[in-house]
Length: 108
Image (cartoon, rainbow, N blue to C red; front, side, top):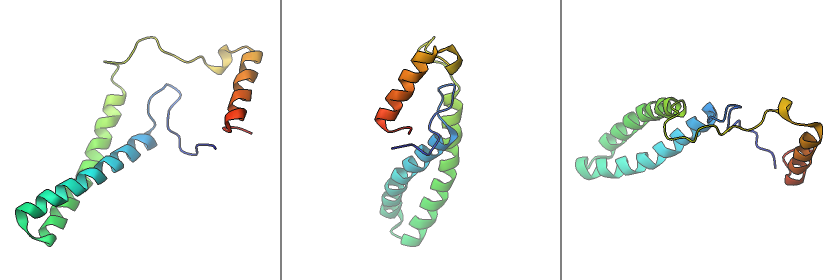
């Protein structure tokens, strides 16, 4: 099974696509919670809908920006953890990796 979405960048940081999908999924959870709380306070489906939609639309982009900033902060991450680049591998090592990826179904 191949993964069609770019989930990680070459430098080991999260891709923009992954950050955005995480932001949307988190906002869906928050959407439900805020909707329930808003309705308990207002008793109006119209006001609940307006409050919940406006807040969550703004929050998707705020959370996305927050994730992208934190992805660039090195604090709390282990130092010196890097994967070898393809030009650092011996041909036999590269073939062994390709074979393993074939076995897992990532490449043909």
